Length: 280
Ligand code: PXL
Image (tube, rainbow, N blue to C red; front, side):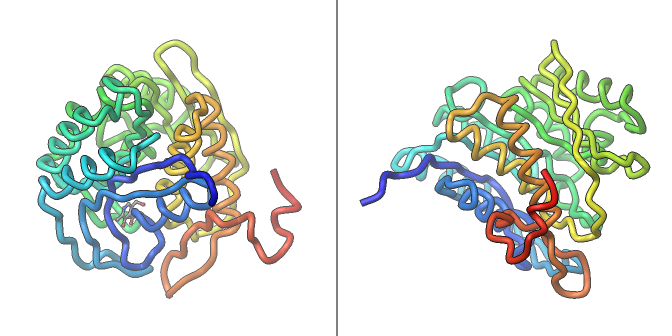
């Protein structure tokens, strides 16, 4: 009998197209050798072109999923994705406190503040941004916004490295232990530089910009790779470096699907060709 691997929990929405959301999270957990568990927050009706429907799960059912897996199976690290509304966010904060997830407890907590799909379809009610800032950021080991989310959360429109530092500082000010401001959306930059900050030290994480339009689930994959590394006991800086490397390889192995945007592939280790030989 094999030994049980570390366990990671994603608190996130379902993407029926299998590209992003909890499907991307689970793929990444398993690709990283971690057992993946889910607290489902919403079911999206979605393909490669658009999100055409959303059903939100009752907040108490989201909380019950967290409590039920934590009390029996145990959680070594957790992450959030789509949280949909303020009631769910409040219930997640309370349930996480109860089982020791987040800064008040001993279980690392990655908060990926998902607000919209890459097509701009909303995945979070506008009035829930405040709950995200006030209920979740102070509990976060690390927050992982992209630049659109940074603008919504801090009002800072990041166009260069200086803005990126100001945004990271604002996010730490909101209570996150670490902020990772992802630079992937600064499109005129030939590199894709992410910035990690803990209130003391700025750490720049550069990577090549991969030329593809198939990046569906990229943010989820990175946050899940970070969560996997934390579940295995890595410190935050090593976990984020691992996540950056992992997502760059996953984007390099993204594939077309449907007639819209295809998903990144966390299974790049199984890539059928030798694209992996050429890079990082
Ligand atoms: O990639 C962000 C994301 C998270 N969760 C769900 C999504 C998406 C993007 O489309 O659909 C359910």
